Length: 183
Image 1 (cartoon, rainbow, N blue to C red):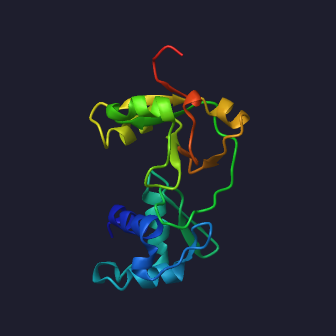
Image 2: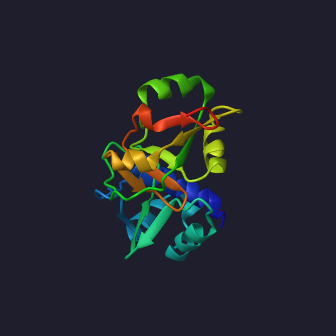
């Protein structure tokens, strides 16, 4: 079983297109594992998938995209489904990072960060992850420093995605600076 491909398929289902598989997520993004397995098994490629494969998929992933609790599974972040996935706010680390394409830096510094096609703006706890994410759109991405501690103190809500990812509804520009630039 290719757990990386399974993870990508499950991510697509739970983050972007549950209706294509006749699944309905609850308000926190959960779906019954039995329903997910039934939906997956309609595709010949995924017919052998069992619940223990989902456990192995999660254990094998370094990105911690999903979680299983009480017979249900959900994607932890990255949703683009129309229904807003409710997250519990939490106190973020004092500094977070966001990688972006060079062409968007001036706009971001003027207008702030918005979720675009996703439900939340994504941040990382380290510059390596931010560089990796920003590198998807630009071979030389710009790393932005996020003053998350001050933003949270000013009322911006942050949500814990996983060990490395934090989320926010949006972030005003006064909490954003270019890494290495004079503050």
